[in-house]
Image (cartoon, rainbow, N blue to C red; front, side, top):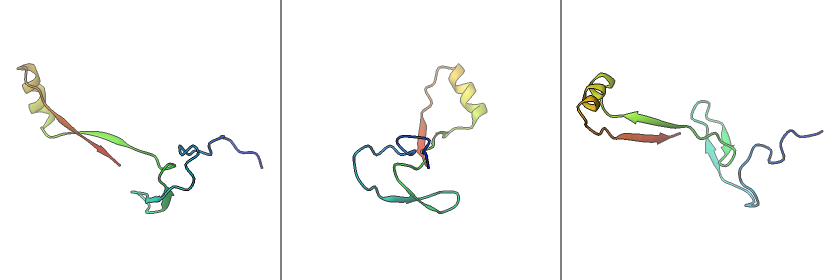
Amino acid sequence: MPFKRKSRGRSKGQKGKSDYVHCSSCGELVPRDKAKKVTRRISLVDPVLARELRQRGAYISSRTETL
């Protein structure tokens, strides 16, 4: 049967076997290099307050979270 991608959806290259991670939504074991990485910016300040502070020239840091 023909396959759609040369990499089969993985990013391992010539590394051999990779370890597994649990899917955060369904709990299935998925190879680490095949799992979708989702990165979100999380603001520590309320959006309305952040807008006011930014107008006054304040720098508001945010945290990045990878799932």
